[in-house]
Amino acid sequence: MVNFTLFNKFLSQLANGGYNLGSDTLRFALTNTAPTAASDTVFDPSVKHPPPANANGYTAGGHAATIDSSAESGGTYTLACTTDVVITATAGGIGPFRYVILYDDTSATDLLIGYWDYGSSISLNVGETFTIDVTASLLTIAVAA
Image (tube, rainbow, N blue to C red):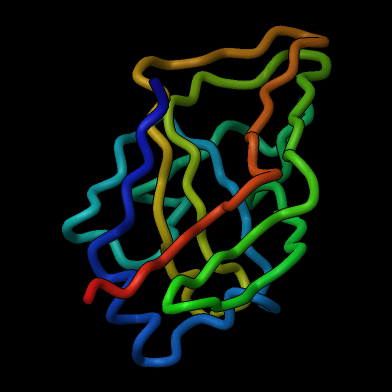
């Protein structure tokens, strides 16, 4: 089972205007180094979140999300995407990676949102694909009464 974890600072950064989730460029970055939800605040590919090489089907900085809607209804905010992100390995393959980090590439400091933990490292051989399934609700935030 794939687990999603919000970075602890996400909600305070959201409340302080750090994000415009409906119009900012959100990206999915791969890494094999465990993120730290309690202390990580910005995407740092050079130190904390080293990605696979910018080659073989993986894009430096990660693959962009296609935002379909960003709306609130009855105290629940939902961010939805139109298209799954499919990464196809070319010559040399991709990986290993275990985590997919969602971050805001529009913010000057690449603010972190959350990450998925796939439980073990994944490597893609030539022609293999990895799908980040986001066609439903990418992110839902509800106000507790």
